[in-house]
Amino acid sequence: MAGFKGGAGMGGNMQNLMKQAQKLQQEMQETEKLLDDWEIVGTSGGEAVVVYMNAKKIIDGIELDERVVDPEDVEMLEDLILAAINDGYKKADEVYKEKMAPFAGLGGGLL
Image (cartoon, rainbow, N blue to C red; front, side, top):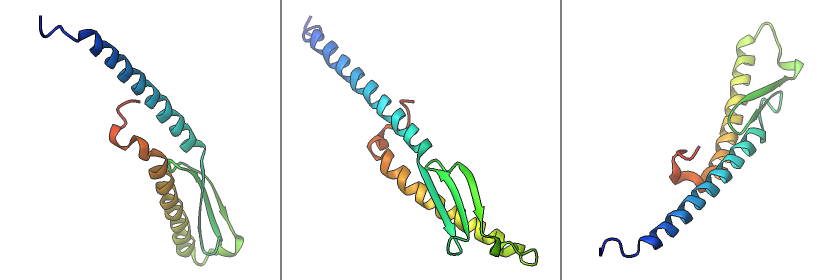
């Protein structure tokens, strides 16, 4: 019977843990939604190429200054686009790490 002693207290602790887990799950879901809606702007060539994405690195737009659209130098345009994407990815990584830091130890297992 000694093992049964304090059993009611354990139930209360378990309920508190479950409530905390549910709260963390809700906060993590809200943060995920925030990252979906967060606009990141990557640029290159003095903003001759601009790439728009969210903090999860989903690209939803690219703007090109007509000065960089040279049929004789397609390779330069490709390089500028890649540089703008990489700039956006770097910024997105910073936002993602900052916003997801409170959930770092959870391993995403709550979603």
